[in-house]
Length: 334
Image (cartoon, rainbow, N blue to C red; front, side, top):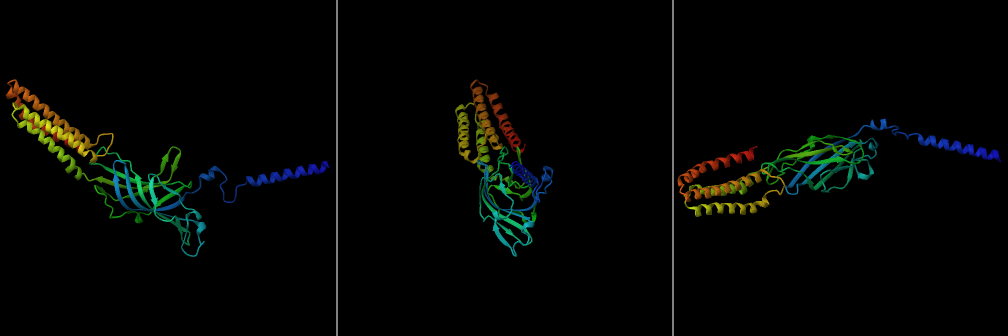
């Protein structure tokens, strides 16, 4: 009896040893060490990106409404000769790159999620995206600002990918027109996404846009300048006529304040000052100084110093325009 029990225990021990040795061996084709894992070659994926349209660029929400097409192609040995002809299969049935638009929270896809497989093992996935992408912009130079707006796409499937670009099939439609902006040709380039422990392969399509400032020149800057010019008429009014001088200066100041409320919807609501904000502050300050000067000359005339008051008016006729012009040039040129 003891011999039977001993034999059974020995057989059980040998069986467990055999199972353990089999489980410890890596499966055929698998990587058996971290060093071998890091030596795995990334999959090569060829990218074509085509921007179909940009319907709107919003300053306030810092978004861009776009319509674009992305084509990814790669070679897979497992697909060679699987089908005689070209076959469209669900994306879930074969390996394919898993990509995401980093700044595309408001995008929707317009094509079926399928992969086109060719007899030689080439596979291609095409998708069209429509919606909003976020494009953070700094508007300090408004309305003479220009920006690089990008659509950033990364690989999120866990596979290390190496993107190459088909520049002949990439670009943007000649019919892309955005009111108020001029667009340069788009550029497709590699850009990894790095954030904390995350480091993902990716690419970006960037468009250089420049704001067309003509609208703001005629709708905002020119009317402001006219109000400022109106305030300078006090320099040609007799200093003794204090009522007329104060009336002109006060009217100009009230007109400026009212106009600033009117144009509030035309400028981006940002916490920092833009070039247009600085010009508006300059114009308001010049009107205020002209009003103060008119009161000062009227007071001098009231004390019998009309010659000094008239001299101040003569100097102000050229000093105020020179200061205003130079300050305007500095604001919009520096």
